Length: 482
Image (cartoon, rainbow, N blue to C red; front, side, top):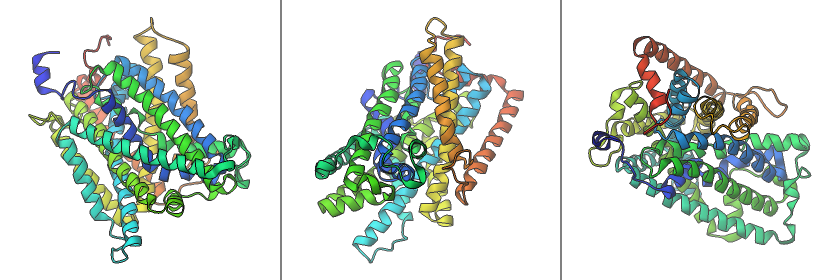
């Protein structure tokens, strides 16, 4: 690396394994996922939801393996865009990068909506003078917090994520342990079988359906990858963070879901909802529910912060290559943070959140944004699996393993077909229902963004093909020839 690169690039060697690991952990938003995302599968899996979580974890580990293997050789802020550009084709790299910036830019919107519809009703319940529908000030406060942390640089941002992530994990581990103790002789391993699935979704069909609806809880495990140019020893730390976050938070999800199932009752668990964790804590342990509330709020901020890190670093890398406006590659002279990209992310986060929130209400708007995110994220994971096969088959034949670099990625692709069809509302399975407005608008919105991206790609390929090709060469000190 030249001295010019050191002076003009992102802050090199600024964060270590711990911070990078918590970038992926907080991107998965464990507190918010435990409270909101995972319970959505209870209607299908019932008391067998812990088994559904295990299946979802297995599917995500397959994709995590492919991303980790690619990160070992291609440490770049463009992350999945660089992987697809090198492993498949430069055009694929552009499309994946274009879509990944889009989806990560929406992550703060998703979590700020959840922050709004979590805080406002809770404050109203405790202090009736506070309007239950006054959710939008919390959106602005949350957006300002993550923008300020991002402006101060990756060290400040990742330290914030580490502290917030550790707190939310600790709260849910303690509460889950208390639920297990309270369950007493009702503790049972039968929740890892199919005997407690509801009548409408008996057996493995209910378990599989439940796993499809818990995939959202795992999305974000790859978010460490865009920090490759700011991490120490990125070929090692990014790989460990991606796999470690998936395993560690997957284990947390299994434990907390098990605890909730045995405490709530496996045979009535299909009625478990998004407010059940707080209600159970309040009923069983009094003021402990306050910690649960703060853990959920904390999780929304931490996840939005991780989304900002991922989106701004990816946008920075693509702007540096010349396929997005060059201004997005402008860095703060002291903090080495992509300040223009952060400012753009702040505007998008606040603008989009208030627009969809006022149009449909924060809870309904949350479903719309979540649907769009899941569609894109799953597609990106599937393409990363293909890129893993292509990269090792073309450029690393001496390392190529039929198991690790072919069979595992193919299994990962197959595992993500059901959740992709479910997120898109394609009724290919009995448990899939057609989406209703506004959630049904997510697919067309994603399609419009993709078409715009393809138009930009065609223009670039005609006028500046070298910029598209550069996406696949953005890995720091890449050793592999094109």
